[in-house]
Length: 156
Image (tube, rainbow, N blue to C red; front, side, top):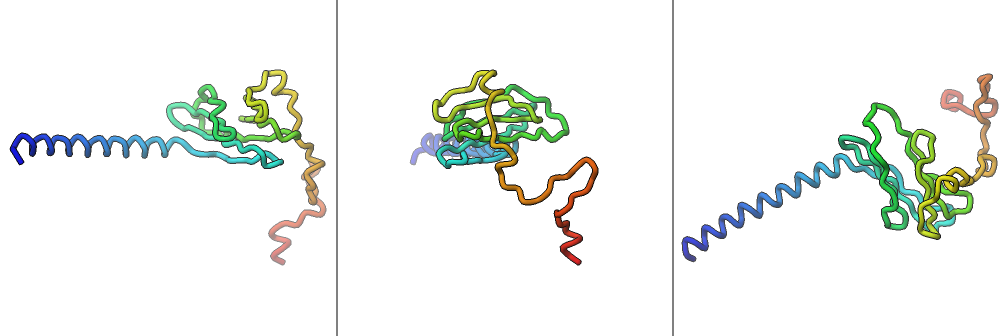
């Protein structure tokens, strides 16, 4: 092998190694700021939605439905608070809604594969709590939770 070929091979190895190192650093940064918050199948099992959170300079939420990215939110300030982000499927199994801080900010019809209008978004009906089969008692403002066992009571 000639000296020029050896030099080219050495330069190629150095550049290739630097490129691999760069890709690894970018990947490490990406995976440190991007996290899947939740994956949720529609109640009928026909569709799947995924909520991704990106914590960078700002906070951004992305919604993926049936493998397609359908929404990327505007920036949220990176405040030290719980954003309470969640995906909620509609009572008819077709629509998924992104809620952040108890506000509906995006809706998507998985059957028609389209974003909901504002009026449609605010008219989406969710399954009422009464239909969820909760067997305990809800907390009351007066304080008593009759019929609900606590860990302390279970240990006695």
